[in-house]
Amino acid sequence: MRFKSLLIALSLILAAPAAPVLAQGMERAGVTSNRIVDGVRRSAPAVYRQVPADFVMVAVTYQSGTRDAAERSREPAAMFGRLKTKAAKTDGFSLGGRAPGQSTADIETVLSTDVYTTDYSNSGRFTLTLNTDTRPEESFETLMARATAFITTMDMAGRSQACLGDEQFIGARDVAKHRADLVADIAA
Image (cartoon, rainbow, N blue to C red; front, side, top):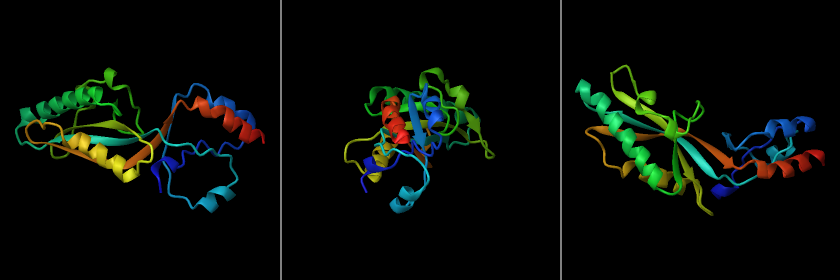
């Protein structure tokens, strides 16, 4: 299945008068979903639009693997700066503060100290949202391989480790361009 054909469910809007209100002010939409058999989706009592995904969001976490207490905070801070710089210089990738599904601020407004945490083992870490733009005819697996390469090809600070989260969110930009079509579908 081509990735671009994944469903972004600008759906389940059952009340026609509410649709324009729900869509006002939205610049992008992010969606998670289970794989739904196409016949089941078509028989659902909902109005939906199938639009191609513009990007995939996934959590990227950097963690310090050192035992040295001072380095546990310096390594993630260094990786935060490197990741931010690389995303700014690389077309098709951008970052947001915190993990997907949480309040994700523009990376330019986020400091490493805003996202730095420690866990039960006192490992220093931070998690951000990595947004990876889709490409025409690209499979999901190929997109995720690009995202993995993006984070693993960076110079690591000390004993830092990087990993991508196991949940992905797909999204569309400029959802207002789909509003007229959706409202027409609801009216029909």
